[in-house]
Image 1 (cartoon, rainbow, N blue to C red):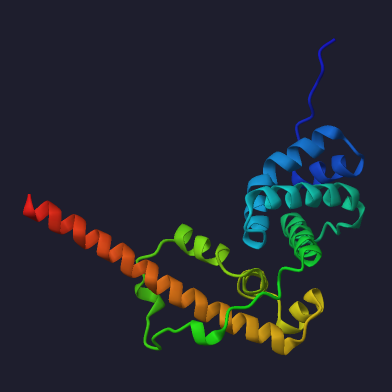
Image 2 (cartoon, rainbow, N blue to C red):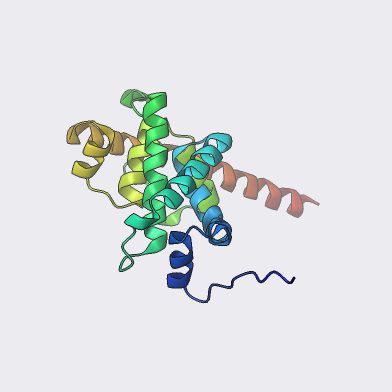
Length: 199
């Protein structure tokens, strides 16, 4: 007998199938959102293996809590919030978001212009992932996810002052490393141009 695989023509039908526990819907959800959600988890868990584990736990929560999804909101946004929560739980267990770098070890010229940077988006994300976990977590929650310091403080169990301090230090550290990377890129470009001219 020919087995018919369901085709979900709308997101609403897909969500309905997911609520009915149809395994095909689980597969479609995973295939549709895994790439984006792994990127979210990787921003919090710098180790890819940890990020993949967190993402899988996140999808399990999505499947378990699908009845809680209000269909008047963004489904992708709902999944994303679950992934962020799972990432924070992972970091909380590892006690990794209170790491700091002494501010006196971070210096940056005040007139540096971000708009002139030669660094691309992938380079910038790599620099963010290289931050201490505490800085990276607050930076992601505030600058990328759009949470307020009050919300971040509640999520992480820290004070608003600590959240603001972590964000400030993260920005200075990122700006410093961004400038260093840009100088390296421009230096390499100059050397290539010089060698080409010399030949």
